Image (cartoon, rainbow, N blue to C red; front, side, top):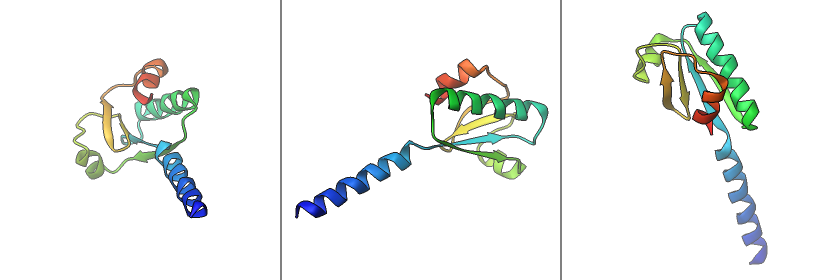
Amino acid sequence: MLSSYGARSQNVKRETEFEAMKKLQILGTGCARCNALTRATEQAAQALGLEYELEKVTDLNRIMAFGVMMTPALAVDGQVKLAGRVPSVADLTKVLA
């Protein structure tokens, strides 16, 4: 019985580690401001030591599905955190923390 408990504990730990990875989505058409938001977001995530997956969403239908009308925008784990501006790296660390 103890061995099955140990296996369960390991699975919980793996799930917790998996959940810690953030999905960062840059919503925009690939313009200079979108690229600036991408760079700043990566710098902020790395400064925080986050494990993350970065996706650039350029399809207008997908962007509109998020409810975004102004780009660039940043979604974290599927929720839009900012739109229409490129904040500083310091501001982005607060958003991502």
